[in-house]
Length: 536
Image (cartoon, rainbow, N blue to C red; front, side, top):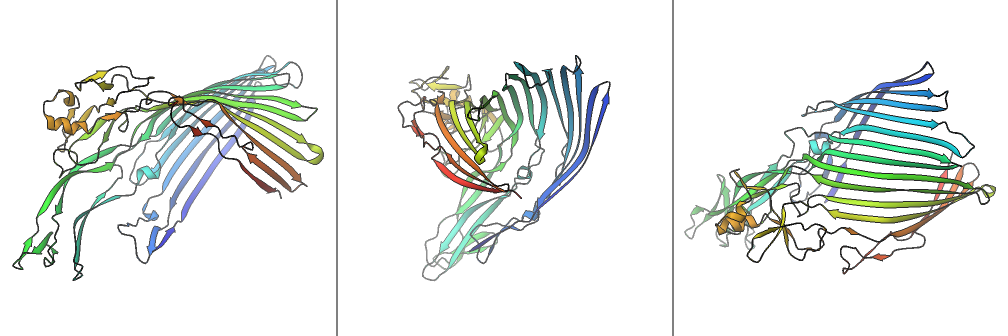
């Protein structure tokens, strides 16, 4: 079996831009505008085999997937305004980008991405004095990301059902009947572009040669791509197994025939099996809220040892969540009729896999760097310590929809968040759908007197018996140190030796949400190597 992959990627980029600088009444204007065209695709044959192919392999040529192109136009204007006789300056920048995606089979509206930045230099930078620079800055912008070709032209899905298999080891007769369902996952609708709204403000200062930059940022992502499915009921007829060595089965007129005891062909009986066929239907339910503070402080150079000290890091927190309905099918045999798959599709709010609804994380880090330069031997020694002060994560809580059960099986709603829960917790779908496409509220589970219906709906409930599920997880602070030594070799080469985690600090740490559980090792193992860089 000889597997080959043939790729012939094709990329094309064309760009025309122009700049215009002018000064009006002491204000400097810089204008930039242009257009850009990009296209990319693949003319290759994809994966194929020479000789025997694996069972159920389907070839898909890359050349069958259309090229994706985009046409963009952009404009940017920047103005630098002197204030108080050039003692201060105000910098303003505004820009807009227009993008039109071009791909066969879809018609996407153009996207418009605006942005605006401003910086107020309260005092112009200077080399001496106590206060050498003070500046305020801020920015806002919207960025939209269109779906990639993997969303627009996903590979077809093939579901093979073995309806009948027979082999006579004495005569060598064999017959197999396989029904293949081809699921075309290509979308019949346009996904919205992912929309990211960014905002930031910052403060820059230089006090006696110590430079510091502090930035607050806030990012909101909406219409993120998320997985979803649609389902269509279907019935598959599985033929009864044949053990008679004289049956001589054959496939004719769309069915299996076997010989009876008199040698006369009879149609073979079959058992219908009800199941669902699922189609991938991604949507725009994804959202992310993120904010944080970044800092960068350069303490300058300690001249006696020619060493500079830089402290940088960030505090970042984010919450991932989704809104809207998601359809999910729990595979398995129907608890009442084992000859069928589960009867109902669950329709969930936000999350179809766990009791949790979304997730969050926060992290506080510091990097402390010492960079020593030794000009006499043209050598630089860098030592960086990475400090992880905080690294927490948590599961989102769906208030009003999480419950436990009392001894009689009645739902007990309450606030189970940020607690160690020793009982099983449940979260219900908001509705369920039957094979006729009829949607009913899942409250039927708690009100029905039909035990069969209750057993079938039980399959759709989400549950967890992890006591720590809604506790914040995290670890105590931990650290790692890296070192790098670079020696210049003349003017054309430099040789570097480096060791990451050179102290081999790998603490065994226990998650604070599970203090009695086994701990985990933090940091990567010690890693070292060398690099040679040549400059011509």
